[in-house]
Image (cartoon, rainbow, N blue to C red):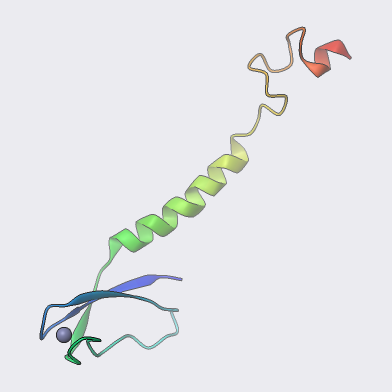
Length: 82
Ligand SMILES: [Zn+2]
């Protein structure tokens, strides 16, 4: 769920709202009730992207299933003993 950042045009209070794409955007400042404008928050998308990016990498980089740096070619590897 994306996080939207708003800034109050009356008191300059900034706040974040976690909203669905279908949710109505916030129009009132929670502290003074003034009009708010939506800010473009790139940090929210960076954090969100970093999450699934890291998960994707952990899935593809696990090629060494034996856990041996030689890839199964040393005397201690199960595949070499078999
Ligand atoms: Zn305000």
